[in-house]
Image (cartoon, rainbow over all chains, first blue to last red; front, side):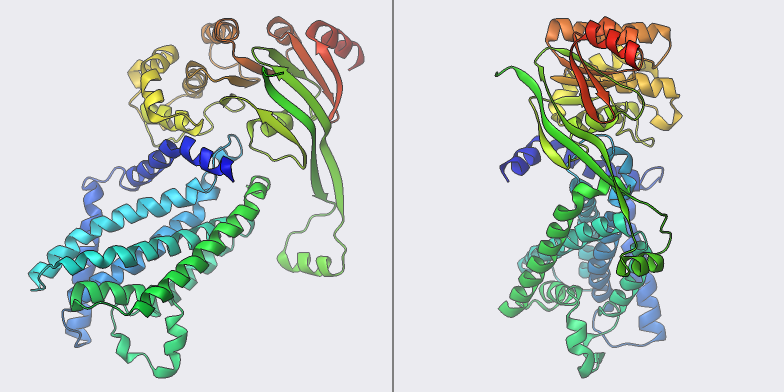
Length: 258
Length: 245
């Protein structure tokens, strides 16, 4: 075990460099560069608001902020896990030739996506102010759901990246799964329209309580129940644990399948 | 002894080769249930053991398929042996594949950083060596160009410069002294010689060019079909190898 920590320390600069590289390559050759991280959600919000406020006439108060929050959480989950899934395959050249702690590849992508997601908080704050939601100290509490989300995403990312090495079909299956997850999360519809009988099923989706907690802190200024925190911590342990375990158990065999 | 740089003890590498091709999942499961899949065991390495002293230049020779590359990969930590253990002391720079971590979209400088970090060095350390790497590679003019626009010779030069300027304790050289033009070849051979003589770098050297092995190495290991055939002074090993192979 000791050797893992020693290695982690030794290669820590590499980790940051990988994160930097991911962000850099993402916006390579685009004129606005990293600004897209802020512009993109804003434009998306305008489109969604137009469709759902004008055409569907929903009555969610402050829909632009509502949809931005939902999108932010879901987008981070889908982008980071998708990105992490490929990471071992993309770096196969390297893994076959030099020794590197392999979990760096999925995890660096999870972290780099987190950084672009945090940038999305800027347009979110802007939209809040414009739509008349004052910024308060309680808003800072979003670090809790953000942390839960990070660990869950890291676990899922590790798991997917390991599975994809052995089973390439995962990529295609996962895109369907993500679509399902999107509709299972109240991003642009209110949670209240979910029929009672599906509620327990839908609540299995860890993104759901995270989105709710974000909205509690940002829109409704309420403290969520301690049980909501406990539920998410439990999710964190399960997803993080499974991801780590599967990755750890399979990593020595990656090299034969790349 | 405390000045052993590489200790390879009893390393065995086993591969399983499926005896027939399985091309679909359905096929796989049916065969699996009927227990029709037969694996042949293939020993790439069989109970290989040797040690290399610090500062030694150690050659590994053998015919194609003798297990040389597998052995190097195990020492570099890329493969995990089925059995046995490898203990190494100090940083290893694998010249197995020059520039294994290169990314075509990044510039030369960025690739130097990335590669140095991949070998486990700190950012500060690479920064200190940056000038020297660039000047040794003779790529000053192109160092901010994306690597995808480099020629293969330029890439090899950059890779070689990174791996050697950074002064690893152990250098693994696998048929790479043939990179670049004759001038760079001369320069790189000289560089390796100076690393050995002045800096006490331990070198593992694999080559099919026996004259090169004889010129550079002190001791050598002869691998045959994954087994150690003989270890000893380079002249003896090579003359015997020539007679027998």
